Length: 252
Image 1 (cartoon, rainbow, N blue to C red):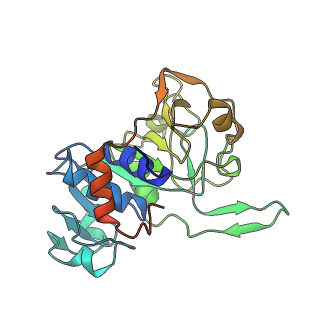
Image 2: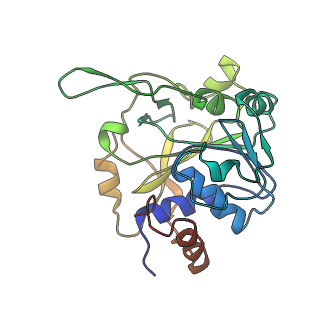
Image 3: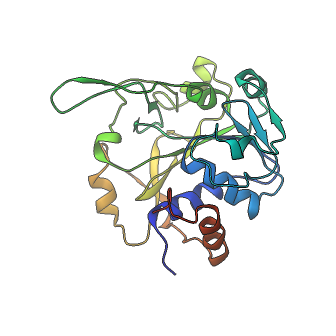
């Protein structure tokens, strides 16, 4: 069975969603992951979108942004940012799914500013609600491309906290959320050691070697004890994904 890397990534993210959970859904691929989870193993999961939309049913059409009309049509609730940030602050959001420009060995995320190869600072969109989600959600999943420049040992600007310096940093600074549980990339899946809170290589995608992942990572990766190859999407998952995105706008 053949699938694209993006189909594999979206499926892996969808599998992080548990039935009945409130999920803070980020832009782009997370929109598809939520829709896939709803139509497979998590039919009662509830989606929170940063623009104040709450959905108990998947959007009837492909979403390009969370503000698209299909995301408003027959939504459970259409409010404002405070409508969804309030429950997040109350600890009611189980899972957040976001992306980033850089992520480091402790799952800290930069979406604010990077320095290019000529030493020039490049301004990025910034946090939006990402810092709140990373600080307050019960679990956090990060989805992004796996490139060495995007996986430094330490982010050049801390926009959204992961585990800080590791080893109970979150607790020491008073962050109530549980922190990142996975970084899902186009090459591999990283998870976090329960003691050191450092990212370890849990799986590589079919056709990708450990060496290729290490080459694109800015620190020495340790292999998880249960290291394996990332499972492919099932036939049913692929069928649903291709119904959600029939032209392959996001998934090719």
